[in-house]
Length: 314
Image (cartoon, rainbow, N blue to C red):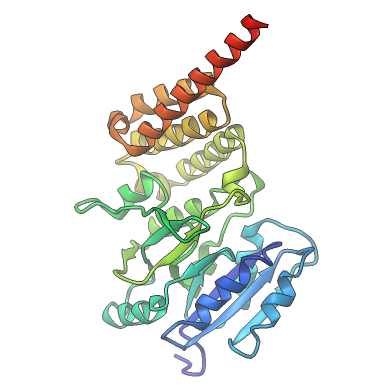
C-alpha cells in the first residue's frame, strides 16, 4: 500500500449548485480525520459553482474537473473515481453533507474489518432548515439484500467503496436509469461483495424541489424502474441475489410510483399501482408511505369535490 496516497477520495459531482456546494465542501473541511482528498466533477455549470469549489483550494486537497458538456451524474461520478487516488471512494452529492466524524469512524471501521470492501453509514434526510424529515431504518434481523430490495437506504452519499472494486462495476450511464443508477450499482456490487453497515457517522441528504428524483414524473419513475429491473434480472448474478425477494422488489417500485403519481394528481394511475404493490407485498398496507398516500388521495378527492361544486354553482 502506498502510504503517500489518501485513504479516502470524496467524489462530489455537481451542476449549478453554487448555493449548496459551499456547505457540502465545508462539511469535508470539518472532518476530524484528515487523510482524504476531494474530487469535484462539475457538469458544465452555468453559475458560479466552479468558483465556489476552487475557493476551497487552500483548505482541502482538492481537484476540480469540468466536463466539456452537460452529461448525466453517472458519467461525473465515474470520471471522479477514475481521477481519484484514495483506497476508498466516498460519494457525496454537492447538496449533501458529511457529519464531522464520518471519515474518522469509517477509518476505524476499516481497521476493524480490513477485508471489507463495501460499506455505508446511516443517511438522514433533512429539510432546508436542517430539521430531520426521515431516517431510513435497517431493521434488525434483515439481510442487507432484503434491505436493498425494499428500497435504497444508501442513496449516493455516505457510501464507501474500495476504488478498485467500484471501477470493476461503475455507475451505468444508460439515460433511462437516471434517478436509480445508484440503487442499480449498489445491488450489482452487493451481489458479489456483501456490504456492511458502519455504525456512527453518516451523511445528511438535503431534500429540496430541484433534486432530480424529486422533479421527475411518475411515468419517468416507472420507466426507469422497468429498465433497472430488466437489467438486474437479465444478469444471472444479480438475479440470483434478488431471487428470494421478487415480490418485495416489484412491490417496492410500484408503491413508490403510486405515491409519486398521487403527488402529481394522477389519482387513477396511483390506485392501479398501489393495488399492484399490495399484491406483490401485502405488508405495504401498514407503512408510513401508505398513510401518506391515503392522505394524498383524500386531499385530491376533497379538492375535486370542491372544484365540482364551484362549476355547479357557476
